[in-house]
Amino acid sequence: MKILHETVQPLARLPFKFYEHDPETPINVAPHWHQGIELNYLVRGETLTFVVNGTTTIYHPGDLWTVNRRRVHSASGRQGADWQEFGLIIDDHFLRDRVPSSQYWQLTLGQDAQATQAGAYATVRDHLLAIRTLVHQPAGELQRPKFSAIFTTYS
Image (cartoon, rainbow, N blue to C red; front, side, top):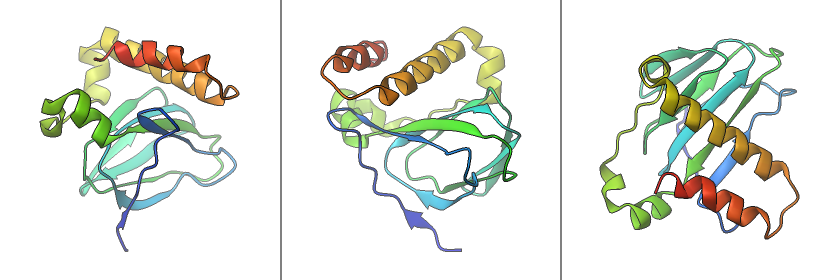
C-alpha cells in the first residue's frame, strides 16, 4: 500500500487543521504522514484500530491520543458504528515559531495518560470539545478571542 504525505492546510488565521469523520462514511484512513503533531479524540463508536509506524493500538470511546511529526499512521474500524471522532493537526511552523524546543517534542497521550494524569487529560478533552464547538459556529471575528484563550493555556 502506498504511503501518502498529507499537506496540511490550517484553518484561516488559526494554527491548526480541524477534521471530523463523517459518521455516514467509513472511518478507515489510509497510511499517511505529515509535519504537524496530531491530536485525536474518539468520542463515540466502537474500538478503533490505529497503527503508527507499525505499532497497533486499539482505542475506545473516550480515548485521546497523539501522533508525532513524520509518523506514518492509519486507522480502521467497523463501518456503520456511529463514529464520532475528530481532532486537529497543529501547524508545525506555528509550533516551532512559538516554542522553538517543540521541534524535539515526542508527545505521548493515550490510555496510560488517562489513568496517570486524569486532570490534565480532562482539560485537553474539554479544550478539544470547545474547539470543535467553535469550528462549527459561523466564521467571524468573535471566535478569534475564544480560540486565543484556548491556545494561551498551552503557551
